[in-house]
Length: 187
Image (cartoon, rainbow, N blue to C red):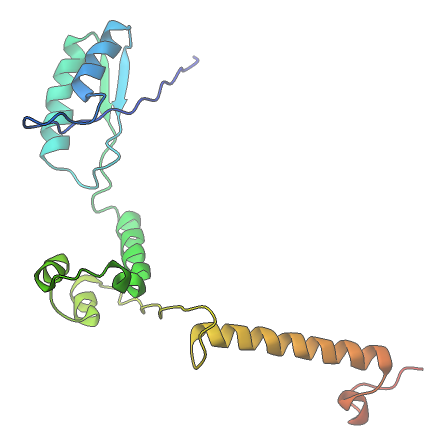
């Protein structure tokens, strides 16, 4: 049996007097029913947990509207919620972004304090991160001193220098390795 998929994006959450982004979910469901669509699967991409909009609005209200509009099969992909892989990826994303928090500086002290709970990063991680992953150090390219960037470039330069010396040693037969007897002379 061949399947035919149509992917549409439509928006919900329109409340209040201000016009919301379109197309609206309810209007789209009615339109799809008119066009003869018999099966519909909702994928609420912006919701990471089950709440009133998924449990009531999508699962109940939109399902009723779909059935009334002639759509016979209705489903919804569950929110990611507490799925361990999602939580782990979310924690990794937060930890990776911590070195760049200063880039989001807010000039008003009260506004800054409302963005993040007060306390050190280590205290926050102790409270929220059960695995206690190590924080990555901030990375600045071409910074002098004992930094990750400096160590990376120093290591690359050292490897290149050793490679050049080995190539010269093998091709010319002269150098420290031959003088010390580590590499025999090849004639």
